[in-house]
Image 1 (cartoon, rainbow, N blue to C red):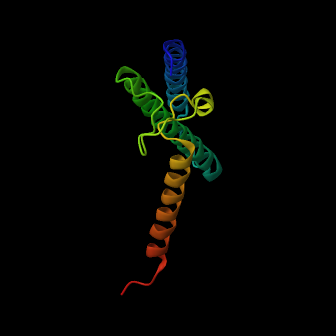
Image 2 (image 1 turned 90 degrees about the vertical axis):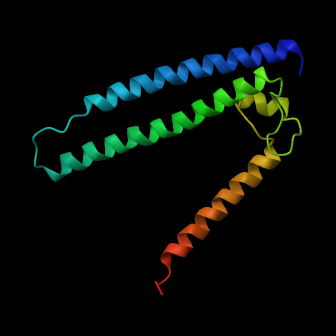
Image 3 (image 1 turned 90 degrees about the horizontal axis):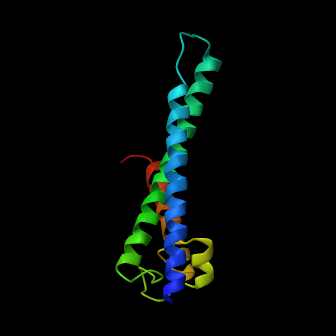
Length: 132
């Protein structure tokens, strides 16, 4: 990848990083505003609990993406940006335009997702059987 494209990639990653951290701050503030009031209404308590869990899940996803962006910026610093961390092939420029923090080529990403899904299914099956 030429120097101009690397500069654009760094700018996009920096912009995405800043946007994401601002979004996370707003999310934390919104979560802090959800207060458990002195209520015994089960419906209200369920709504409050669901809202808090939703914010927590959003924050988890944002943290994972934030880590990916940081890894991509470190790869830029090491002159390894755009290299698949699994097979060392180049990640297509089209993929990097859509997901500038991508660390794997499409083939390896698909394989990793299939492996993760398979492991989740196996973990679920192991928990369903009768204990011996």
